[in-house]
Length: 155
Image (cartoon, rainbow, N blue to C red; front, side, top):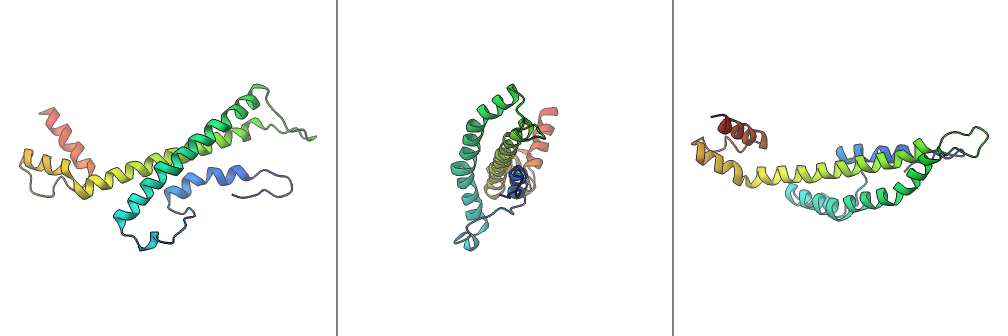
């Protein structure tokens, strides 16, 4: 990520921006074959990468960082420098950053599921048949399916 220079620090800023970069698709990607793929194949690559690498890595970093952060908070760790700045809030940033990154990974998985339902849409087709709707009405999004569920439940 970014190095803060002579005084150290600054690394957490890069980590905190990782979830934002993933959301905006602005993260670094080795784009050897990815650019040649279609939207469905890209969605599969994103899903597999998230499930095999991103989520396990976030869980690993959280499990390894937790004891250090917990101990730092237990003693209210401060810097040995004459300024004695507190270290425990900065160490907590690592946990916050990887929770946010893991959360964004879950969002990538949900996005993949949403696109799978939109592309195949077996649920929407079932609602169209049951409700006698025109073809394609329930295909537009998951929201329309949820609206139909609420409408069915209230009637």
